[in-house]
Image (cartoon, rainbow, N blue to C red; front, side, top):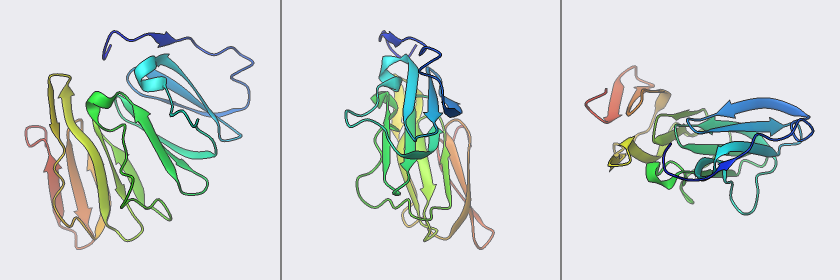
Length: 171
């Protein structure tokens, strides 16, 4: 486990009624219900959702230790194990209105916004003892598609060139 945290039990069958989809990360499972609410089970550090709760969820994205959700009003929330840093999306500079793509790897998330600009957050997470900040090239714009492996990123640009970033040992 990521740490010696406690665990949330699997919800009862009655709690798991009305589920539209299931999502998982390395230590947790999440059920997205038809009403936009979520239930989680597994290790506390990745299950514990923000105190305000999670409602009106339309899209769910996970990486190894964190979860990122987009809500029906284009707002978003993130949570998870803070050691990987992917649990804290930026509070400014990220617009989910008409976004093109969300992609994740072990410790980070990146979003291609409608403007084709990319916003990323998180880290080059390898382990709790090897965790370095994710360095994103300045002015990463005109991106058509993102690809990732466990610790590296590649951005296919609209001019058919590629920009790579992240851990150079893995990509």
